[in-house]
Length: 301
Image (cartoon, rainbow, N blue to C red; front, side, top):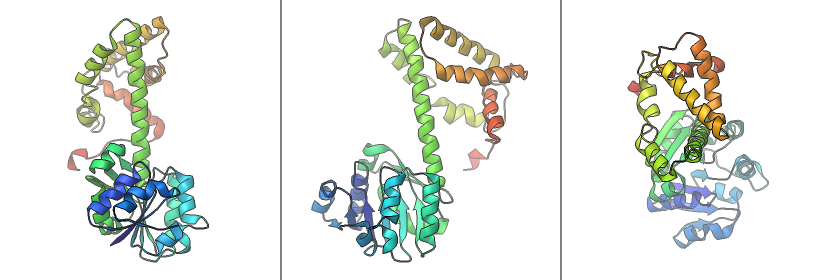
């Protein structure tokens, strides 16, 4: 199986090296030739354009900065759509727009090319050690056909659902991570402004429920995800703690926007008479606004 790799940047290069380490015949292209020299020096074959690369390979993987670059590689004057062979599998590892990857899939499918979106989680460090998680959207049969290529690059390869599903998961994962980071830093900043040693507060966070990711790993699967709101830690106590924390932040003049957003939904849940239910019940306010339920047979997966 011949593989083409387009986008030999910080993550793309170590991903492509993993393909070579697993015995794949590799063809590479990038807008910057110098970025591919490490791969070329180890035996990869340079091809001058995506268009020319597309006729030489069975699988094309791309790892690019964003939607604009992917569209250029696919639809541009020297894009793969002008020369790609029917039966080729196109795998997009870019964190991409859902609309863009669906449009690419439709237009490539029309000429007999199969498409997967497979953004990755684990960063440069994970790419270098093959400790990546690949979140793959697309037809299951095509996923299975491409599995040797995917497995070569990542330790964990998950089929998420139809095309675009990989990027939905990646975008929401990253957004959750960014939001949690901001909430964490806002809380740390209050504690430090209140006079505590930053190193001590960080250690407390690391060694307590937050640092062990207790909510996602234990509490939410046992409460919200099952719809079981028998109290473990009651809403009235959580609401008391949140309000005291906000009072402290306000007294110190520290921006506490993430907690204040949380306070709005917690207040609504308290008004519904849920004070003695598990504190996680306030999260159903988001479910109500979004029109979704997060109940599923998680333990069966």
